[in-house]
Image (tube, rainbow over all chains, first blue to last red; front, side, top):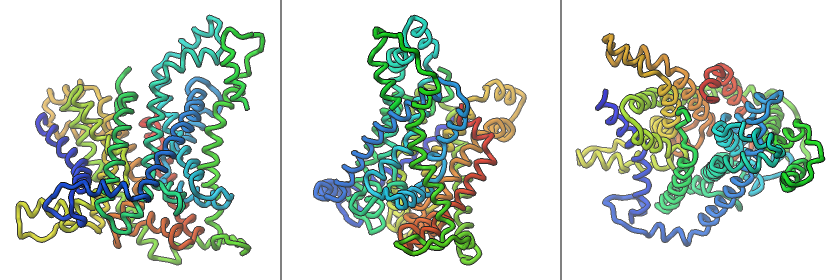
Amino acid sequence: MKTLGPIYLIAILIFLYTPILVMMAMGFNASPLYELPFHFSLQWYDALWDNSILLTAGLNSLVIAGITAVLATALGTMASVALSRRTFRGRSLLQLMLLPPIAIPWLITGTAMLIFFYWTGIGRGMHALLIGHVALAIPYVVLVVGTGFKTIRADLEEAAMSLGSTPVHAFFSVTLPLLYPSILGAALFAFAVSLDQFVISYFLATPGYTTLPVQIYSSIRKGFTPEINAISTVLLLGSMTIILIFARFAKPGDTSDKR
Amino acid sequence: MQNDRLISASERGPSGPRSRRPLPSWISTTALLLPTYGWLTLAVFLPLLTMFVFSFMSATPMGKAPIIFTLKQYRAFIDQPYLVGIGITSLLIGFWTTLFCAVLGFLAAVALVRSTFGKTREMLLILILLPFWTNGLVRVFSWTMVLRENGFLDSLLHMIAPDAGSIGFLYTRYAVVVGLVHGYLPYMILTCYIALVAIDDAIIEAASSLGARWWTILVKILVPLAAPGLISGAVLIFIPVIGSFMEPRILGGRVGVTMGTVIEDQFTQAFNWPLGASLSFTLLAVVLAIFATFSGVLRRGTVA
């Protein structure tokens, strides 16, 4: 058992990382048909700079992720304040209502958005993508900030108020500074959720306004070249970096540890 | 509106006049909640409702054509029997993916809890979860590099046996399942890990000091006590898998026809939105039924 465990875990890690590493390596291989033997080349990364379609899509993705992070964090933090610190009727129902964007397959949510936005005249494109992405990111923000709230003692705020602070002032000068790590973590998370979102974007993008994952998908279906490996590597390393920074803030997976 | 008032009140700070009576708490609670739930209503709940209405239309409403309501879209499973087969394929892919994730993931969680400690364990957890939070599309794409003819798998084989043929199995249902297991395995490891670390070591020590073999400990103690983690993981994997479409599309090729790809086609190729809506809604009904069945277990597993 004691030796089998580490060996098994290493096997799992090999399973998880082999395809990713192979994909990354092929972005540095000169052959356009992914042929071996391996000849190191940066030509596919060079080619990215001339591929205006991929570059524009990448820029769109970053802009959408940035706006999504700001909006979702603002709205989600507000909701989290009410859900974590107040007691009122219907609170558990409201908490339940946060689940559909996470739990219902995005194919269903995405096609529903497409129908609704078409029917109401909202249409597709950047604004539609933003509406969708913010909605998907809000529940994660509420969860992350809500976890942050659990680590802060409510009586600190009460102490401030009993010393003459208004509730609002107590929140902004006592609770909010303590919450900053969680809020920053939530914003990073929202950014990553939006950056990696493909399904919703796929249904809401227009031919003129796409995001990087949507563009990658259509390239894969058309027949791909190592350029796709290069841009995928950039995207993967980008979101891994964000998640690692997030992990330093919020320690996901550590939920069971007592704080 | 009410937000502005909240913010201006904060700017006034404690030194400002406090003669004004504080707002009733329900007003500020509503103000805090309204933006989030308004947004979710616009982006998720109204669209789902609209899709429900669309699923009863006879055709995609275009121009001035009259809208006729019908139940025919829901009869699709009877009128187009091939859909039944596709539905079964989707459920089978969901079943096998969930089963493989459960076995591999549970054992990985046991290995994490029983044979790693402190910093090593923390690092392993992050390494396992890291791919999960990266782009799923890119990860699915990366499997085409491994499984294609003369891909990485074949190269490995040819290093050992240069004359062997190709064992690449891209564009089969096996490839779809492998890609899906790769995508969702970290989920199962996490839910099982959370359930397993909560088990008191003393129970296992007691069992082994009384002579229980590791197999008995696994089956009689660990699996039953970690069942909530296993079930939450299974539900949270099965549901997205039966709604997946890019994995079967990319890894399954022509044999990768599932409910997900059929629904995708209705919206992107066939432009039969009402049929797409009714299929989406049928899928949603299945999803909600699963959630309702396991809601008790899930609540214990996720709220913690």
